[in-house]
Image 1 (cartoon, rainbow over the protein chains, first blue to last red):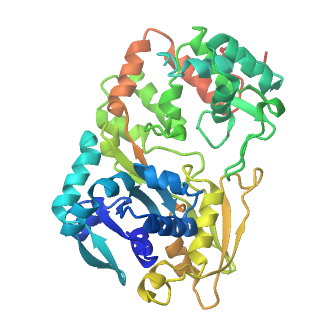
Image 2: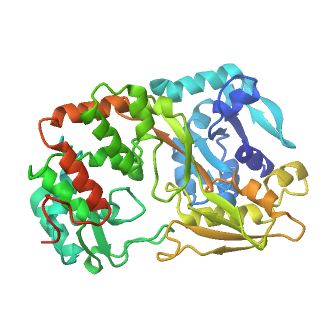
Image 3: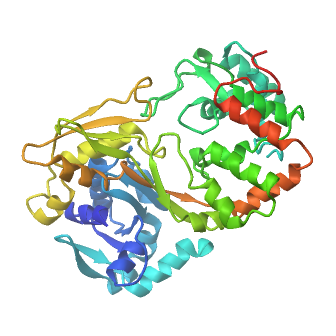
Length: 129
Length: 324
């Protein structure tokens, strides 16, 4: 959760999905990593990489990998972040329409609608649930 | 995977290649492994390193000499410059593989989480006790067996917590691994030791340093800054192969910061606290019972005693003997 706040504070445009989003939407789930759908513009992906470089525990993937990748996991000083890059390229517009800003600490974080967060959770974790 | 020990083909080939009382050049040993398995030396070396690193698995099957890497980010030296020989526990495993001794549950103890598998390691004496209990008292309940085996155990000495019932039932769950964080007697330092195995000590140090740096957004988001900023004036990584192989990072609190507050903040920092997904292929009591049933016609009590002694560095009694 903190990792998402830090990315938002760094002006990265993303949508929080996954367990953290569901928890913020008052669903009863245990919160794990921060799963974020990244807005697929070049400038935003550049800001993402800059932000991650400042907080990552390991080297951050290149712009090429971030731009063309599917799910890019990054271990940061604020917790693990799974950057859902492909989902952003495919669904940013649709997911953005249902999303809304919620406060985490004193940062506004864009959080996916419950129905979208559940749908993505089923998509990514369906095999293990 | 072998029914007798749970070891894989490459692991067994490595044990045979380093079966000597003298240290052998790893390049030579890996050539033998390649001849037997066809696996190129660079791949087999990764397995050999795992078998030799003292922080990787509870039952170390190989002893290494030279640079096998560190708990930090330092990589091992090339195999041309390192040496290895079989450990006493490795001799017991190899004897069990060859049928010179009854089987021993090496894989059940060591797990495979050291290479991002889902099976965690357990305390060797606890698994040996659980196996002995099944042999001597077959009517032992599943609950008793689970309790005997206990929580997974990591050689770095980190604290482990999690849903043992779910793990023992064969369900996927998550362990929480936490380093020990203490305050020095003079209250000037907060000391982090026994860092979890699934993060390097260098990464943990980098994370702490990153959290102690002023962030560009701090003024605009004082609430987030207050939650995340670590009040540290200095950090010293004292991890060393000899005195603190499992990590020792010393943090000096900023003036005005109580060591208790810093300790409590550090306990929640990624790297000081990690999570690990785990799942056993079958319920734990069933795994233990199945292993005993599959091998029950052999003298398992003797081989377990030999493994126990081999891990303690004693010559296994009645076993394959000490160094060749």
